[in-house]
Every structure is written in structure tokens, then in C-alpha cells.
Length: 358
Image (cartoon, one colour):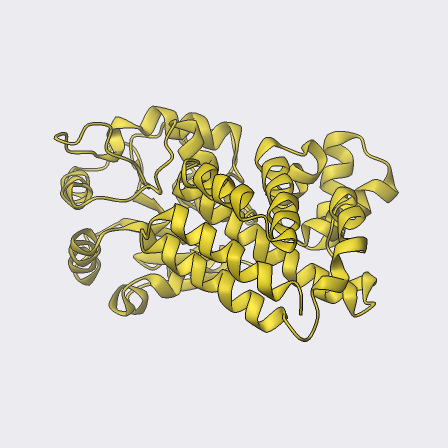
């Protein structure tokens, strides 16, 4: 990305993609700060000029944000400016945060979306002259969450972009974007954080022992947000682990009454948390299958997960793992498609009641 600046070939749109928890949005904003810095070095922005100071606070007048939001009132048109103060605070406090974290910040159990009205806001903002900088920057976080109308309007803008405008599309699912949008951007693939770098970062930040820091980095597998979860053991991680254990035990015992109550509870937690749990189930099944193959060095389990899995892993084997993963993938598809969650989780648990016995 620095070479783009040095060689004076900054494109009008970058698609910055990679896994969760690796700082893609922070990287995008650092790039925006760099190209608008008044006194840049060969490696970075100066950090002290008026432009850099405003970028650091996310308050630069030529920096615009687009991100998933929710409609607080059914009749009200929802645009990102309604939430931008909260979003700035969220980014400053949690630069590696996920969509779940953001939805929790605005007290929503919905998935979040970039609505059609936002495309009109993009056009309006880009029609304005720059206030202070050479480039106007439009940072779009999770562009894959744009609805179809908004995506098509964005495509038209990208086809004829205004001069000295930089679009930064920051995505975890770039292939979910329109192929025509993808083709009009230059893709930057952001790698996972190297384990050595991650270990050094958490050791310094949290004053961990070298051994503990290496353990955290190994389990986090390049994901800084995951590393924070392991250290802090946040409520969502606790919830997912506890529900996984309960789900597996009740399914194995074929306790239909308890599973029905559990499914009703899971239906009330909101779609984003449901998706988070499904993702956790997928991860735990993979880890237990690997553990059952006596490949502990390949496992990425924390201490509580490992303690449970040492007893549970024999029930995840070559006779049932494929069918289990198929059922979980189907449940994920149904949750994404707004199928009634209570029925999705009840059906999944009944399927596992059979599969765990294989």
C-alpha cells in the first residue's frame, strides 16, 4: 500500500479484505491518513500535522464512513450519520471489533444493513468540495451488507468516480459483493497476524508471561480480537461455550423437553448471536475431530474447551463428522435466510441426538 503512494498510482477504490480481528479497518484508515498527511515520511504519516490529528480522532471533515446500521423506527429512513458519533467511539475503543460488537454497542439484536438511502448520502457527500485535504475518503466497512439497490448505486459511482476521491471497501466476505464492484477495485489481501507478532503484542499490552503470551497467540491463530477474548474471556465466549456443552449433553441424552426449552431460549438472543454460536459449533466440531485423531498439537482450544473436549472428542469421529458439519452448515443457511430460529435449533439438536450415537 505504501508503494501505491510512492509510485503515485493510488487507485480510486481499494477492496481491503481478510479474516476477522486482524485490523483491516485500522489499516484502511492509516492509509487514508498517510495520503492526506502534510508532512509524510517514506514509511508513515507524521502523526502531528493538523490533518493527522483529526484523522486520529476520526473527525477529519474529508473522511466519511459507511457501515451497517439498523432502523430504530420502522417509518424512519436510517442513514449512517444517525450513528456516526457512536461508530467513532466504537472504533477508537475497539479497533479490532466485529459486527457483533458494533451491534451490541447500539443495543441491537439485528444483523445490521447498509440501506438504500445511504447511496444518496454517498453521492451527496462526494459532491462537496474537499475541506482541507487532497483526497476525499469514503470508508465502507462491511460493504457485503449493502442491500441490492445500494450496491447497484455504488457500482454506478465506481464506474465514474469523482476526481481525488478514494473508496476504501473493508470486507470479510469480498466474494459476496457484486462481481462488477469487485472488478472496479484493487484488492488488498490482508494476512493473519503472525504468531510471534501477536505474542509480543499481548505480552506487552497485558504484562503476560512469555509462555502465556505464546499460548494465547497460538489459540488466537492470527486474530487479535480472539486473543483479547482469550485473555478477558468475555461474556459472548462464555455464553457460546456453555451453550455448546449444554446442547451436546442434552442432545446425547435425547432430552427432547430440555432441547425444546433450549431452542426457545436460543430463538430470543438475536440473529447475530445465533450466527456467532453456529460459527462456534463449527469450530468446536473441527477441533474435537482433530483431537480425536490424536493431533493435539494442531488444536486451538482454550483451557476450558480442552478440558471438556478431552472427554467429548470420542463422540466426534469419522463416522459422523461429515453429517454433523452438513447439519450445522444447513442451520447457518437457515438462520441467514430468516427461517424461524426455534425450529432451526430444535431440528439441529434432534439431528445431533442421532449423530452423536454413531
